Every structure is written in structure tokens, then in C-alpha cells.
Image (cartoon, helix red, strand yellow):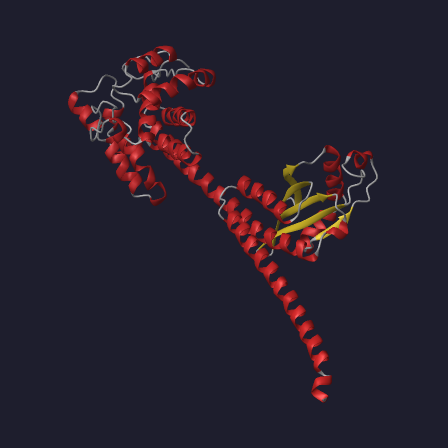
Length: 397
């Protein structure tokens, strides 16, 4: 009898346990879904390499966590110890004025240095509040610090009209976790871009050193590189391929380091024997570039930039689309720049005459598609450049 009296109590207790377990299970399910989503968002940010891409992704992904109305990303300059706005989304001039006021008041810098995620109800009086949606009042600014390896990187400052109480601690925690991953990606992107700048400086310096050996070819590599980039963009190549072509243009003649000055600077046309020596420069250049790990992927551009579409080029006599597209682009850019610039043994053509020479050699020396691209970008070349005319040593001033 005693056990039967306790039966209803036991049943109610079991129900309470089941209800508690269901609540725990639902909480775990939500946490798992949130962590899975956060992992996906973090992986997306981590995969970006450029600073602009990282910043843009952070703005996009933060909106998946918190449906904000407007936002601004600020980056911290360690030398000046100041914040600057780097990316704005839906930020009206009035909102921007309020953010600038927060910067002047030192609030944002304080939040960054303290590592505080804060929700700040807007108390600023001004006509800008009357222009906002809803009841005309900006309810809150959400400020999330970006910190990597205990270093301040920047701030994510979001504007919401949903009110301070609408944000749970979980919302702000998820934003903070995302911001921490983004801060590391921002730091990595800055480092990556610095390395790329240094890489570019080294390549350009090497190209200038090559051009400096020949009074008549100074600026040749730079111009070939610029023309080739215009062609690659006209052909709608991916940004990474365009950059490779830019560097390939700068380095296409690096093999001339191994050619004697008597041949390079000969004040008349080369003999057949001398021309055979000169024809070795793509192979020599490819050997040089191949030894530098960070440049080795440019070997096909350097090696094949003198191949012809009809198969009569060198060093291997490749034909048509056997020739890598980047090398076909460099062939047109290199030939057009050479034709329109002075050489020691002849005056350069006008840009118009050079264009007609390319037209006459479509399908022979030149890839038809790349030649067509040259015709498209010709106005930009004519606007930015003039044919390179170089005085002979001793002439002019």
C-alpha cells in the first residue's frame, strides 16, 4: 500500500526528469547547430587570403548570426593608435556621424583595448534618429572587438533597431567567437599582402636590372607586363592568372642575363649565329625561374613566350593551343611593344602601324583570340602610353 501511495509522486518526478532531459537535449541540439554553423563560417573566413575579402566575409557572416541593419568595420593602426573605417554597409551619413562621435569620445578604442563586446543604447540626440525606420530611434550599437594573439586588430560596429534586450548573451558570444577567427584572418591577410608586395618589388627590381643592360630596352619588361595584364583582363581570366601574367611579363626576358653584352647591344641586326645564341634566352630564363620556388609556376610563361601560333616559334615549336595561354598573351604583348619601340638598328612603328602588323599575322605568329583582345584594349594603351623613343647614346641632352 505504501508503494502505491508513492506511485503518483514517482510518476510526476519521472515526468519532470523527462522534461528536463528534453530541455537539455534541445539545448544541446541548438548548441551543436550553432557550433556547426560557426565552424562553417570560421572556415569560410579562414580560406580568404586578401584583406578586402576577409572584411567583406566578416560583414556577410556576422549578419547570419545577428540580423543587423547597418554596420562598419574599423581597423586599428598600431603606430598611430587610431581606428579608421575600412568597410561600411548601409551606413547613412547620420549613422557615420554617430560612429565618429563614438571614436572621438574614446568609447570604441576603450572597447577594443579592454576586449569588451558591448551593446550601447543610442542616446545621441540629433535629426538623424528621425530618418531611421520604425519609430525613428536607433535602439542600439553592438560593438565587437577584433583581437588576434592578444593584439588589437579592429572593431565590428553594428547598428540594430531591435532594442538592447533583443540580443541574448549567446548572440554576442557567437559574434565574439566569429570576430576572433576573423581577427586572425585579418592579421594573416595583412601578412600575405605584405609578402606579395615584397615579392612584386623583387620581381620588378630584377626586371629593371635586366632592362638596364640595354639602353634600347629600358622599360620594355614593365610595358610588356602592363600590356599583357590588359589582354588577360580583356580575356576575362581569373585574378590569380592575371597576376601570374603580370609577373611573367616582368620576367619574360630574365634569360638575357646569360647573353653577352656584345650581342644584346649590337648596333646592327644580329647574324644568324648570334640570333641562335639570342634564341637561348627563354630556356636560360626558365632555368633561372625554376630554381626559385616561389616563381617556378611562371616557367611556362618564360619558356614559351616566343612560340608562334603556327608552330614556327622557339624553343620547342609548339603550335596553337599547345602553347599555354599566358605565353600566347605574352607573345602578343612582347611583339607589340617591341614593334612600337626604337631599337638600335631601326626606328619603332607607330601604335597604329604595330596594330596592323599584328592583324596581318593573326593565325601565323599570333593567337586570333589574343590579337582580338589587343584590338579591344588598344584605346587604353594609346591613352596611357606613347611609343617608346630612345635617343642613341650621345644624342640629345
